[in-house]
Image (cartoon, rainbow, N blue to C red):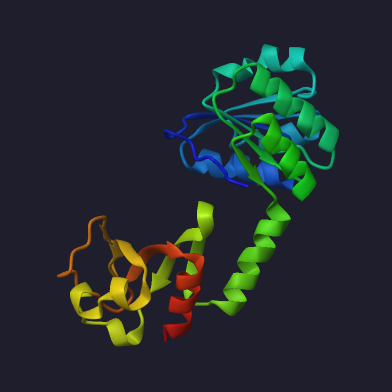
Length: 227
């Protein structure tokens, strides 16, 4: 499954479905400065997010007319976070697509659900439980990789901490690209200052981090060599 990322920073997002995932997403989007319309059939759930959502609505989003009333096509993006009702999730995704919603993300219950959403034309599909399980497994087996974003074709971007043997050295001395077959994309020093275009003279220090890109195989191999 190849997820498509948004082409611009979204300012207005509608979250449809306020289970645990939808509620946490609404809160996180609000903290990022996004205007959020939070929608659910349950008035209790919409009331629970009212303190941080920009707007709330209590309605059945699987009904096309209700989506039109919400003006769903006017939002930068829509997240379908419906819980266990797979049929409602699929119908809502189909209606959003037919209404011309700019960008659709959706929560899936399993791989089959995800495949159906992908065929409908949903841009980004997430299976929260599976994603969390994979991240936990990676944390246990590759603790030196702080985070990993998987891309298409077996490639990924990862954040790594600077190994003790790298402290005080310049990137040119480490020759990371040739030795480990990964590219250094961004360097972050111990103060959290970001160098978005690191050069060979960039010096690493205690607490520095690097954002690197390469194949998952090479990233895993690099993790095993960090100490």
